[in-house]
Image (spheres, rainbow, N blue to C red):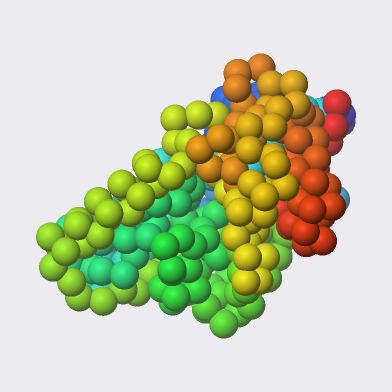
Length: 301
């Protein structure tokens, strides 16, 4: 990967790491390095850096790395990772929370519970951060981010800070119109008043359902394929005979067939190729074209 970027990188107050391994930062524990990994000190640091960075340099935001395949050749340009300065969650009023782009779904839902704000319990079940939820219209158990988002503060690739309301994001199933290179630095969610005990009971129900149905203690990337209209991806994968299918160190989960697993030695190339094999088998069996839900980034080795 090129390192010609080095002389022209803007100064930062946060941490900038060259050739930073990304495998430890993603759930699959596979893949190459970021040409540069930037962990900004605050929003001003991020905004100034992007404003001064050559517009030709690609920028990608990284959350918990739960819905991501980083290809083995790594990610060119700059990967932005929001750390502790972006992980706060605060109550604004009886039904509203402002959440940093780096805050986890567990932190958001737990803070909402303590504040007596219901309606965001589903975020407890999504392994990711607020920035990823907003970008992908994250959802589970009958609710999506579009149902609770009021607005999001975003730093565009140009460094400009803008506030986007729900309607600006053009939400559809697991998709938004958030521009490439934009980084979500905070989001405001609105729920409804509820008793903390009732909220906790719903969170417990969701946690138990996930534990029973998903391979949570494996190296995985969460739901691999989007559910086609009127269908369940896992059922199509199962019907195509893919349960337990392997390719190198990659495997289709036997517990939940819409999950791919790194059994310990898989390369990202093997994981992605297994996913493409599953898509081909489902297409042959049902005529349905599965779409990837997991994001695949970077270059092949």
